[in-house]
Length: 333
Ligand SMILES: [Zn+2]
Image 1 (spheres, helix red, strand yellow):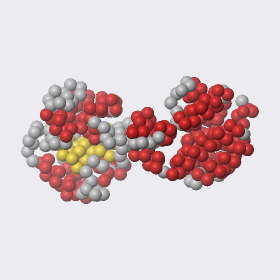
Image 2 (cartoon, protein in one colour):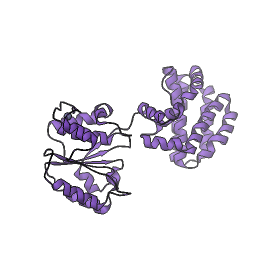
Image 3 (cartoon, rainbow, N blue to C red):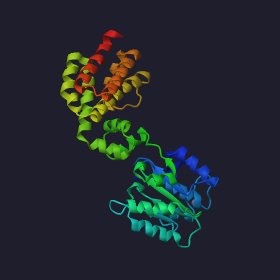
Image 4 (cartoon, rainbow, N blue to C red):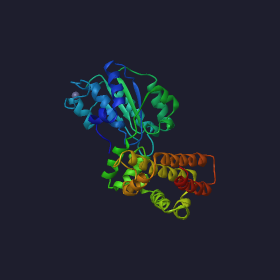
């Protein structure tokens, strides 16, 4: 699922530029912590770092064709060690074994690396063993820790490492990845706006309540076209039952917010990319008869409802009031 080191400069341009400068100036730290959601390419960036250091023909990027480059890509470089959780945790014995391996004389070149996958899954004993090792850095060994949960790591380990954060997957890219996983274009368009990683996005797609929330919000948008009474009936039937907790209610309001943002985008630039491509005909119709002032008024009221949600307002009343406010725009502006 993870992409290749060759794509690192294009997928994580700022981070890769920073890393390249540090390697060229020989200022790369001996312990790196790469953090970012699943699918952001932590392993690819780790391989990029290692290749750029070991490559025989490196310019600003590794050549990918020399022997060290190829050995890193295939996972066969003798000076690159990898640790992954054994079951639920990374165990003490694995760290001990790693330290033992690293203390042996180098065979390929003097520089050695080790990559720790899911570093937050070290238990107390293995984390302390690694910490001791990190506290006695040698110039030939570089640690690269990967995690999507940096706060679950021992603070003492975090503070020993130079932390680098990978950017979330851009919505357009996430949408393509979802469609490759056979998610429909309409669902992929919506989910890619709300999730920051493929993992989160796929979980959302599979969640029944998310599907219902999406459908409920779209039914409400249609009903709002027909009148206040219709809209209130639809809200009670399809939306209010979904406001069980604050988090779910927030998601419903976010979906509504994206619907109006779609309409604004459609008005400014017909045919622009949409969160709900299956509703583009309706959005076009609303965009045609609405002014930007009216749409702004509606967006502001959704934002206000979102704030009131966090002040623990009654969620049924909050939604009823919002429906009325979304409708009254036709008479007030
Ligand atoms: Zn190379």
